[in-house]
Length: 151
Image (tube, rainbow, N blue to C red):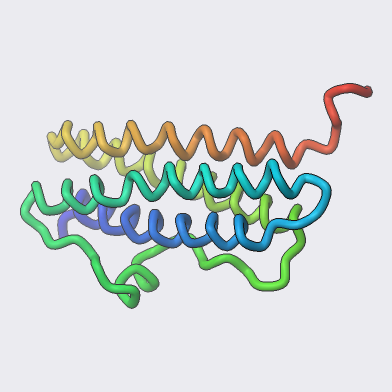
C-alpha cells in the first residue's frame, strides 16, 4: 500500500463527512446566535467542499482511483458523522474536535508526502491544512466561555 495514496483517500473521505457535518449543523442551528452560526457553518461547508475535487484529482494524478462511493467514504473516514440530538455547544465542540483530528492527520500526511518526494501532494495538504486550522480557530473561539467584554 502507498502511504501517500492512503492519506489522500482518508482526507478525501474526511472532506465528504465534514462537509455533510457542517451542512447538518447549518440546518440544525437554533438559538440566540442562529443567524451567525447558520451562516458560519454554511461558509465552512463551502470551503471544505471546494477541496474535495482537488484531493480526488491529485489521487488520479499519481495513478490511483479516488474513493467515490458512500460506502468507501464511510469506511475510510476517520471523522464520524454528526451526532443526533445535540445542542449548539455540542455541535460546535464536535466540529472543533473533527478539525483538530484532521489537522493532526494532514500534518502527518505532509511529512509522508515529503518523505515520498511528492511535493505536489505535500502542497495540496499544506494548503488544505490551513483551511482546517482556520476552522478550528473559529470554532475554538466560539466555544470560549468569556465574552471578551468582561473579566
